[in-house]
Length: 182
Image 1 (cartoon, rainbow, N blue to C red):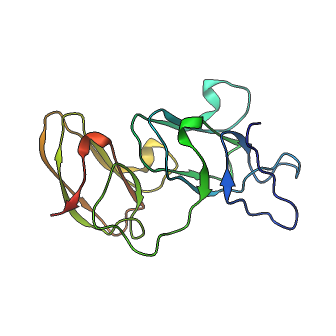
Image 2: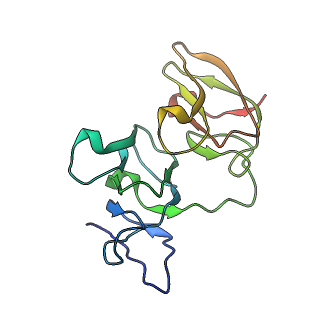
Protein backbone atom coordinates (compact mmCIF):
# COMPACT_ATOMS: atom_id res chain seq x y z
CA UNK A 1 0.00 0.00 0.00
CA UNK A 2 1.69 3.11 -1.27
CA UNK A 3 1.78 6.13 1.00
CA UNK A 4 -0.31 4.50 3.72
CA UNK A 5 -0.63 6.37 6.99
CA UNK A 6 -1.63 4.30 10.01
CA UNK A 7 -2.88 6.16 13.07
CA UNK A 8 -1.79 5.00 16.48
CA UNK A 9 -4.23 4.29 19.30
CA UNK A 10 -3.37 7.69 20.76
CA UNK A 11 -4.02 9.49 17.45
CA UNK A 12 -6.93 8.01 15.53
CA UNK A 13 -7.44 11.08 13.28
CA UNK A 14 -5.65 11.12 9.93
CA UNK A 15 -5.08 14.44 8.23
CA UNK A 16 -3.11 13.38 5.13
CA UNK A 17 -3.27 10.31 2.89
CA UNK A 18 -1.11 9.54 -0.12
CA UNK A 19 -1.94 7.61 -3.27
CA UNK A 20 -3.04 3.99 -2.86
CA UNK A 21 -5.62 1.76 -1.12
CA UNK A 22 -6.93 2.71 2.31
CA UNK A 23 -9.11 0.47 4.47
CA UNK A 24 -11.93 1.72 6.67
CA UNK A 25 -11.63 2.60 10.35
CA UNK A 26 -13.38 -0.57 11.55
CA UNK A 27 -10.54 -2.86 10.37
CA UNK A 28 -7.95 -4.13 12.84
CA UNK A 29 -5.56 -1.40 14.00
CA UNK A 30 -2.68 -2.56 11.77
CA UNK A 31 -4.96 -2.49 8.73
CA UNK A 32 -6.64 0.79 9.57
CA UNK A 33 -5.42 3.75 7.53
CA UNK A 34 -8.11 6.45 7.48
CA UNK A 35 -11.32 7.21 9.35
CA UNK A 36 -14.52 7.93 7.43
CA UNK A 37 -14.99 11.57 6.57
CA UNK A 38 -14.63 14.24 3.92
CA UNK A 39 -11.28 14.41 2.11
CA UNK A 40 -9.94 17.09 -0.24
CA UNK A 41 -7.26 16.90 -2.93
CA UNK A 42 -6.66 20.62 -3.42
CA UNK A 43 -4.16 20.31 -6.26
CA UNK A 44 -5.42 17.41 -8.37
CA UNK A 45 -4.30 17.41 -11.99
CA UNK A 46 -5.91 16.02 -15.12
CA UNK A 47 -6.22 12.24 -14.78
CA UNK A 48 -7.26 12.14 -11.12
CA UNK A 49 -9.35 8.99 -10.63
CA UNK A 50 -10.79 7.68 -7.35
CA UNK A 51 -12.97 4.80 -6.15
CA UNK A 52 -14.93 4.04 -3.00
CA UNK A 53 -14.93 0.25 -2.60
CA UNK A 54 -17.02 -2.39 -0.82
CA UNK A 55 -14.20 -4.95 -1.07
CA UNK A 56 -10.66 -5.50 -2.27
CA UNK A 57 -11.26 -8.31 -4.76
CA UNK A 58 -10.74 -6.06 -7.78
CA UNK A 59 -14.20 -6.63 -9.26
CA UNK A 60 -16.42 -3.98 -10.83
CA UNK A 61 -19.19 -4.98 -8.43
CA UNK A 62 -17.05 -3.74 -5.52
CA UNK A 63 -16.95 -0.16 -6.84
CA UNK A 64 -19.52 1.82 -4.85
CA UNK A 65 -18.74 5.09 -6.64
CA UNK A 66 -15.92 6.53 -8.72
CA UNK A 67 -14.95 9.60 -10.70
CA UNK A 68 -12.40 10.70 -13.26
CA UNK A 69 -11.41 14.35 -13.54
CA UNK A 70 -9.91 15.41 -16.87
CA UNK A 71 -8.72 18.83 -15.72
CA UNK A 72 -6.79 20.43 -12.86
CA UNK A 73 -8.97 21.41 -9.90
CA UNK A 74 -10.06 20.58 -6.37
CA UNK A 75 -11.48 17.08 -5.76
CA UNK A 76 -13.65 16.32 -2.71
CA UNK A 77 -14.72 12.82 -1.64
CA UNK A 78 -16.91 11.69 1.27
CA UNK A 79 -15.56 8.33 2.50
CA UNK A 80 -18.32 6.51 4.39
CA UNK A 81 -18.02 4.29 7.46
CA UNK A 82 -19.50 1.42 5.44
CA UNK A 83 -16.78 1.65 2.76
CA UNK A 84 -14.12 -1.05 2.86
CA UNK A 85 -11.51 0.92 0.93
CA UNK A 86 -10.72 4.17 -0.85
CA UNK A 87 -8.40 4.04 -3.87
CA UNK A 88 -7.05 6.89 -6.00
CA UNK A 89 -4.36 7.65 -8.57
CA UNK A 90 -1.22 9.74 -8.19
CA UNK A 91 -2.81 12.47 -10.37
CA UNK A 92 -5.08 13.26 -7.40
CA UNK A 93 -2.04 14.24 -5.35
CA UNK A 94 -2.57 14.18 -1.61
CA UNK A 95 -5.97 13.97 0.07
CA UNK A 96 -6.30 15.83 3.38
CA UNK A 97 -9.09 15.81 5.92
CA UNK A 98 -11.52 18.57 5.01
CA UNK A 99 -11.17 21.85 6.85
CA UNK A 100 -13.50 24.73 5.97
CA UNK A 101 -11.81 27.90 4.73
CA UNK A 102 -12.33 31.06 6.77
CA UNK A 103 -14.03 32.97 3.92
CA UNK A 104 -15.91 31.84 0.80
CA UNK A 105 -14.38 32.78 -2.56
CA UNK A 106 -16.04 35.53 -4.62
CA UNK A 107 -15.99 33.40 -7.80
CA UNK A 108 -16.12 29.70 -8.65
CA UNK A 109 -13.18 28.10 -10.47
CA UNK A 110 -13.23 24.59 -12.02
CA UNK A 111 -13.43 21.76 -9.49
CA UNK A 112 -15.45 20.87 -6.38
CA UNK A 113 -16.65 23.36 -3.79
CA UNK A 114 -18.46 23.11 -0.44
CA UNK A 115 -21.45 25.47 -0.35
CA UNK A 116 -21.27 27.84 2.62
CA UNK A 117 -17.52 27.28 2.97
CA UNK A 118 -15.65 27.49 -0.35
CA UNK A 119 -18.49 29.35 -2.06
CA UNK A 120 -21.67 31.16 -1.03
CA UNK A 121 -25.11 30.15 -2.24
CA UNK A 122 -26.68 32.36 -4.90
CA UNK A 123 -27.01 32.73 -8.66
CA UNK A 124 -23.83 32.55 -10.73
CA UNK A 125 -23.05 33.07 -14.41
CA UNK A 126 -20.28 31.73 -16.62
CA UNK A 127 -19.33 32.30 -20.23
CA UNK A 128 -19.12 28.57 -20.84
CA UNK A 129 -17.48 26.71 -23.66
CA UNK A 130 -19.05 23.74 -25.41
CA UNK A 131 -18.71 20.70 -23.15
CA UNK A 132 -19.18 22.58 -19.87
CA UNK A 133 -20.65 20.26 -17.23
CA UNK A 134 -21.81 21.35 -13.76
CA UNK A 135 -23.68 19.73 -10.88
CA UNK A 136 -25.28 20.76 -7.60
CA UNK A 137 -24.70 18.09 -4.94
CA UNK A 138 -26.31 16.60 -1.81
CA UNK A 139 -22.94 15.08 -0.83
CA UNK A 140 -19.51 14.29 -2.25
CA UNK A 141 -19.90 10.49 -2.11
CA UNK A 142 -19.84 10.22 -5.92
CA UNK A 143 -23.16 8.40 -6.16
CA UNK A 144 -25.59 9.53 -8.88
CA UNK A 145 -28.34 9.94 -6.26
CA UNK A 146 -26.26 12.77 -4.75
CA UNK A 147 -26.78 14.98 -7.81
CA UNK A 148 -29.54 17.54 -7.17
CA UNK A 149 -29.33 19.13 -10.62
CA UNK A 150 -26.82 19.17 -13.48
CA UNK A 151 -26.32 20.32 -17.04
CA UNK A 152 -24.08 19.49 -19.96
CA UNK A 153 -23.74 22.57 -22.15
CA UNK A 154 -23.69 21.68 -25.85
CA UNK A 155 -22.79 25.09 -27.25
CA UNK A 156 -20.69 27.99 -26.00
CA UNK A 157 -22.35 30.97 -24.38
CA UNK A 158 -23.68 32.33 -21.11
CA UNK A 159 -24.82 29.77 -18.52
CA UNK A 160 -26.57 30.43 -15.19
CA UNK A 161 -27.04 28.32 -12.07
CA UNK A 162 -28.68 29.03 -8.73
CA UNK A 163 -26.93 27.27 -5.87
CA UNK A 164 -29.20 26.81 -2.85
CA UNK A 165 -28.10 27.24 0.78
CA UNK A 166 -29.12 23.60 1.42
CA UNK A 167 -26.81 22.23 -1.28
CA UNK A 168 -23.75 20.40 0.07
CA UNK A 169 -21.62 21.24 -2.93
CA UNK A 170 -21.11 22.41 -6.48
CA UNK A 171 -18.79 20.92 -9.11
CA UNK A 172 -17.96 22.34 -12.54
CA UNK A 173 -15.53 21.32 -15.27
CA UNK A 174 -12.85 23.55 -16.80
CA UNK A 175 -15.01 24.00 -19.93
CA UNK A 176 -17.33 26.16 -17.81
CA UNK A 177 -14.66 28.72 -17.06
CA UNK A 178 -15.01 30.93 -13.98
CA UNK A 179 -18.44 31.50 -12.46
CA UNK A 180 -19.19 34.95 -10.99
CA UNK A 181 -22.24 36.23 -9.06
CA UNK A 182 -25.02 37.16 -11.51
